Image (tube, rainbow, N blue to C red; front, side, top):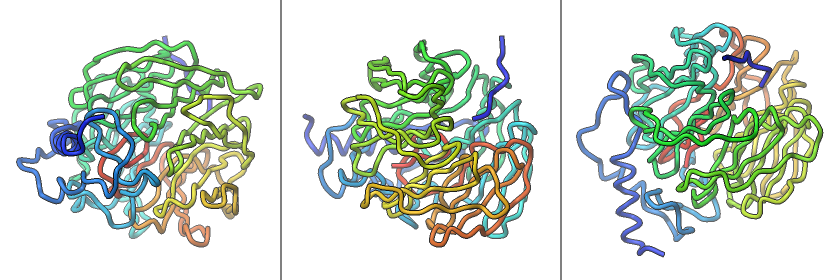
Length: 398
């Protein structure tokens, strides 16, 4: 990110029952943004059933479907019954224009521009998949968008909402209050504060959860640090400084097998490879200038790494455990945050410094479209996407 303006052992049956209740009852609905479901479909209940036993998870968290692949529920076409009839759209927050551009991916055209609060940073799908929350960082609000209709609701007062995540059990929303130096656990429905966790690092911004959901790793971009946070206790249990002067960690993503965390670093120009359980000093994998966003392919075999400072995307192969290729945007660009289309065929990325969005063929790396949007496009969300529930950011689904 560019510098931001500162401001003053249970039984399996029991686990499944809890998971089904969590999927059907939890969520982040807003009266202005969400159509309330009146009953649960059998398909929604079946979606909580694991194909095989996984690690004992955070109580109330849907069971891990496949312990060898945390993204097994994200395959092409596996849309939750909650979102299967939602219109396919790409929502782009424009930090300098205080708007959200809405793109129809079928035509590569902007079909609507939604006014929101000051300095929108990310568009974040709620845990229950129904609402898209626009993080108006300097406006100190969240704007809810009903993903079924595309209509924006009344803003909710939330201080310094730079980024937003949800605990795997759907119990809390977590606001990354970057300038306030806080992790703020909030009610996922009303966004009322439940617990504020002060942190000593500067610039909390991105995160991802362990396979069992019991802890999460947070990047602190301005002080070049990482945090390890106990999810249930809502407490920092580990902190370390990255071993490169001027490090500026960004996006965080866990590997499909749940063993490794990857943290993009825009000043170290690569990705840190971290053993989350041990939380030992990570190793740097150079990728390209300004490494920024991390996205998993629909088959869980590759990770797309955006190198914003050089207009490229590096591809990391999980089976090979190494970088396998690099795509370069024609005529340059500044690929930042984004997501993968529901069918897995297109990688959508914001062009942070070029007021545009890129659509990239995930098979060939060819640029399919370059779409003008507002100023400073940042954390765009492709929606809907496959998955049972959302952990937040621009769409991290399990």
